[in-house]
Image 1 (cartoon, helix red, strand yellow):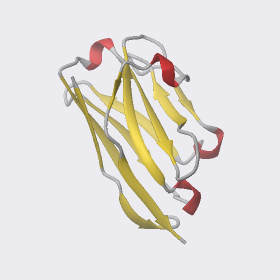
Image 2: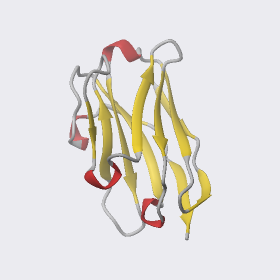
Image 3: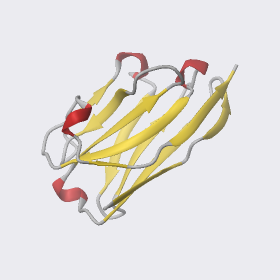
Image 4: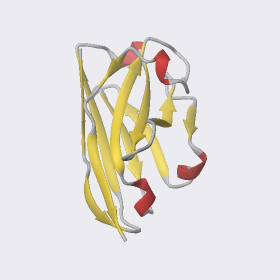
Length: 123
């Protein structure tokens, strides 16, 4: 099982990035997904999650209205569209998969984790 997160980079305040999480070895049809981030000196926090069929999503308050999670079963990929980026969004971003149908907010419930992708927002 491998989750490969990509799409990070350096962007100015107000810019956009789209993160991708390509899953191999697992079928998106049987997993819920989450996006997390960890800034230097901070704990890793849950940003967003999406249920197995995509009918339920969750967003951290600070990213509501700016970030959108989606999934493409044909591509076996989960996306995180990030708009109106702020310097405080600078962090390493991770995706994770859970053998669950519902959107999960606790990190301990996730079974598979990808390596992170760095997002840096300059002021």
